[in-house]
Image (cartoon, rainbow, N blue to C red; front, side, top):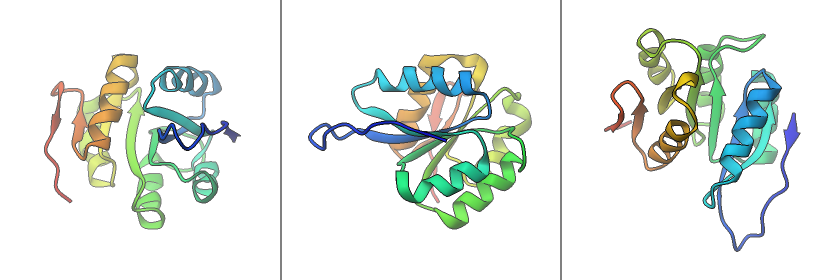
Amino acid sequence: MKTTKSRPASQTRTRILIVDDHPLTRHGLAQLINREPDLMVCGEAGSAAQALAAIPSLRPDLLLADLTMPGKSGLDFLKDLKIRYPEVIVLVLSMHDETMYAERVLRAGARGYVMKSQGGEKVLEAIRQVLRGKVYSVKTCRPLSWTR
């Protein structure tokens, strides 16, 4: 797991924990996110177990998670996460076709689903939509209303 230095309190930014088993993907996402004035990566994890262990100390507002990681299925990870840390917003970023997984991911507790093939701008759009309390599905190209 990698942590990122915090900004001064005067520059409050949304804290994001990136969970993906590919270091290059984590690095690229961190660069994309840290360029934004309202967002910051507070840490990175390469597995579900690392992410669950890191949440208490990193206190992320949002978890950007891959669906396929070693050790635990992404859906089981989401269910565990929602039981242990219900306040953490989750956005799933996956290579898998949205039509196959998005509904299951939302049922498991995530607020959105973005395919990795959609690119950086869609990821940033999805992050901001779920932070505003909307459910995001790139297939619809717009946020969906969501009530829990």
